[in-house]
Length: 239
Image 1 (cartoon, helix red, strand yellow):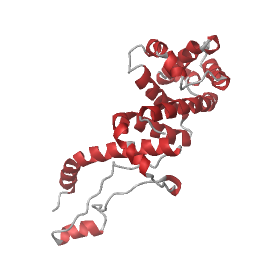
Image 2: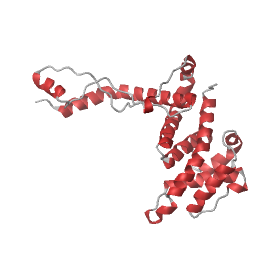
Image 3: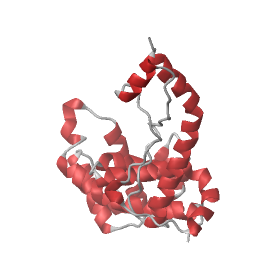
Image 4: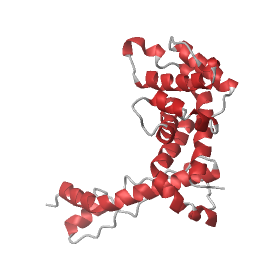
């Protein structure tokens, strides 16, 4: 009797090294396509790597024929069958981009979250990129970001539409906004919203999550998207 679990375990072990490399490559190209085409990138599913199996006896052939063991060559999921004409210039960016794969991954996932209206997830991912480049993951995020305020201003404007959205979100959370006091207040509002969205209380759920907060987060995310888009393009020296 063929031990299917044992076969799957062996294949998983042998494919793990390749899966790690393919995942990094997928994140790299997803990020590059998102940055250079200004669109939601295709999702390269590296979690399901298939191999071609050949039966050595009738029992194994039966397992293959009935689909008990899946065989194939892998696949790529491309939303809306978008046609990407990859230009030669894109390949020149692979070298500079290899040091930013993590940020590329956050960015492409954020865009997919925006498309599916998962605005809270998109907010966390965009903030994660800003946190990573401007505060280096410091324990006191607010203080670290305020120390980099002149750099952040180059990518994130002090826009009235964003300030209005921040004020509505914090009002729904029962908190006061500081963004009208100046750019430092805008940074403080962003950090506070991020903190409150992470720490959920089931007894005060409307202060953490409701339809209005979700809608206003979309306005904030549009600015954070632009910030991360231009920041990452600068990091890889993209024209």
